[in-house]
Amino acid sequence: MLYLILFSFIAGLTLGIKGKLRFLKKYKPVTYITVLLLFFMGMDIGANKSLISQLPKIGLLAFFIAIFSIIGSILFTMIYEKARSDKK
Image 1 (cartoon, rainbow, N blue to C red):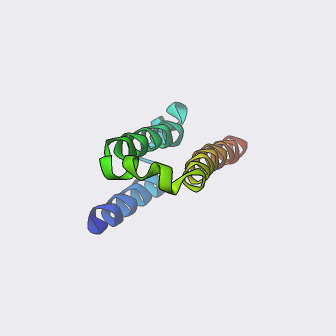
Image 2 (image 1 turned 90 degrees about the vertical axis):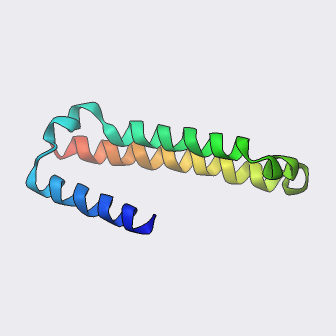
């Protein structure tokens, strides 16, 4: 899995430097990918029966970790998109 992540990063970096994916800028893929990531993260957590059964034990801390993860993802995506649009 690590090799797949590294390969994807290097491929994206190479294509970005060469300007092969300029047409994607108008679709804001980072925003959509972040939303998909959050969706799949929630789906994975919801499907994990042992984690769901331990929620009363984990309690409020788990709730705050989830909320701050979502807020941080949205906030940094917005900052990134704003920075990219200012460069145009």
